[in-house]
Image (spheres, rainbow, N blue to C red):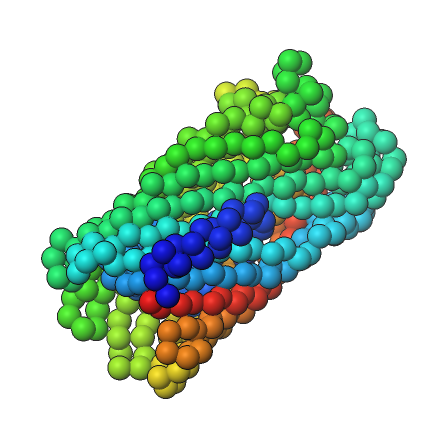
Length: 428
């Protein structure tokens, strides 16, 4: 097959991947890994160059990955719920209704010479998606109706945030075993919210109509990811990547909900990884990642009943540190097996539960398995399964500030996750 045919096929798969990318197994709302192979190793892979997802992981990988293409699909299955109590009396538990999401991803890489590699990755972030039924809660004490939703609005309650990132990549070997790379990032995101009628009362009057039930609004922005990959002998390699905060255009239809008049920037994130080849068939990868959620006002500002302004209330998320450990065993020339674990901080403090009923990004641990199986001389199938055990966070309700001193409404959010992904890869 000629390069032209590969390019046409890549374009078709790129169009497939350009569909809105929904929620997925998460560290906060970032994916626990990018590429099915990395996902099978707990998300670890900054120091490896085994697929075409350099733009998502470490741009320098493109100099070592060779000529290849990957297209994958993940089936993500989260279970989310929220509950409320008052003075020790259980006020009920509500579960989010939608529990299956389809997440495509795509990568393409070409080695133009011994030193220069280029590629493109299409991937997404999500995790901020809930759909709670209406008519489940008595909110008369908060000024709402008896048949309200979990945040005292009318009808169904929920949000949907999706982010698609297109990352063309260029990498150059500055020495035989050392490369640097750069990926310009084009980000497209969509957001919708519904059932938040109660919060129209807590934004500036000009923005009262830009809080809820406005359908999907979109936002765009441009960013950058930088990377380094170095191989020290045949057994040890080091990788690093860095992406500064990405400034996004405003969600004008939700200017009264998000701080800074609807801004929802992509937080600064960085990572450092190592890989060690213990034997010719056994390899370990270890990554450290950090995501600075707290520096994005819409995400990191403390929750409050003053919305939409420069210092308006946010989700109150903290920065997170994540450790990813994975091992892969090449059983034979045709089969490779993987296991991994991913452990990170819970970004949702117990003092900030109420807004996170909408976005319970509380996961801390992901346990993963995976594998790759050759299909002929140039094709392969990879897969992963991920389980994230249930995490529950509880704390005082934001509604207490409406009820006066001494009010003791308590709320909790919880989530557990399962995900299965499959990926077709081709070398050429």
